Image (cartoon, rainbow, N blue to C red; front, side, top):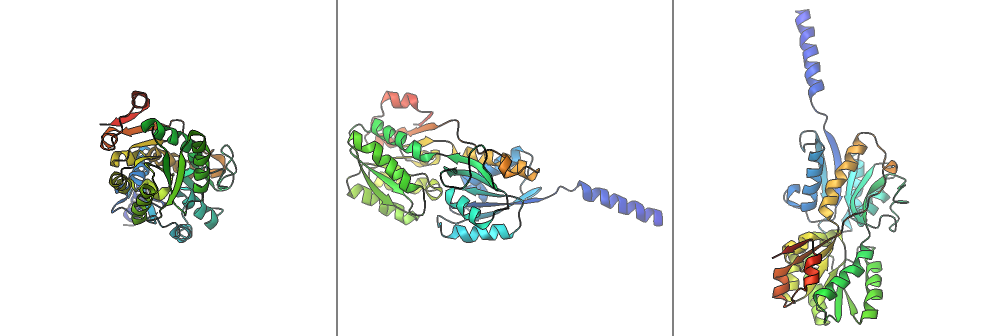
Length: 323
């Protein structure tokens, strides 16, 4: 009996060793809370990235998701909450979320799935040597805004007034507005500024843009705006505004065009950083990456509805056209 008991103990120990270790990670995003993470394009892309590396949600890793539904003031509390869970790594989407986590901890590894200018925002020391506990992927959207304005002009040659839609809670938007104004003045385009921090405010902002004589809207890069494509498209259609943003999802939803990196793909790439950190790498040793490809997407249906015959040069330039 003793020998049998010992055998059972050894067998049980072997079975225990075969069970996969479940890793818990955090995820902080200002986007709207979906019914399931898979219902959010960026969250779903991150899960796919983890799956590509052998992780199965619910089997060998689980995610503590924190969405703030566009309320940037809630990011601070959510960041502290995640840090207190003593997780091995936390993922952040957006500059505001990254800043909230930077304020909450100097030790827990943070992977930024995508944010505007991590160096300029003071979140990392440099791209090659981030230093501290934060690394990830960075977008220079301020530089892209000038090109976006040029694309709006190409689609609408008679353009004279453009609205810049900003989120007052996003610290980078002042720089975007100033940059766009600097580029617009020499080509005879006047810029009006409209703000929104809630879905309802988006409708109000685009109504204000139209009332001020704008016929186009440049949507500044923003974590909250990124998930509001359908709302933006509906309001733009109502007020007959040509729109451009960073996000391909907006064009799929019915906005006119997007020009920028694939932010969903950034989330998928963020999984590589998480995997390396879970295997012992330190954030300070992992250089910050920037996009190597910028995509132009056009919605020909929306252009036709707005009475804008898209020039051939613009169509040839596009990486994808929704017919």
